[in-house]
Image 1 (tube, rainbow, N blue to C red):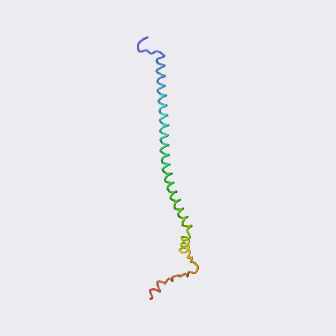
Image 2 (tube, helix red, strand yellow):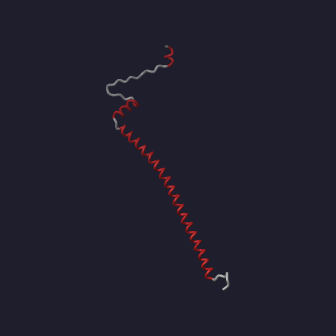
Length: 110
């Protein structure tokens, strides 16, 4: 055998070793793509979780307001005050006093 010549088996093993390298690079690249995809999904889910927590806080505040309104509407004194102020209702035996409005022209004549 002459120096520098390779036998068929050496060439074959070099070629198969090259394919193994290529296969390993492809596998590593696919794994990296998968990991990057998962990390991206995690960031998206964290952002969604933060948004949902904000919405939850807003709904909890609204619920608290509604519960306070329910408590007020179950209070007879509050309902009576609303009826007097908004509907002009009076208790039995009370007299209604309605102030008279004076025209600006009549007031200027005096």
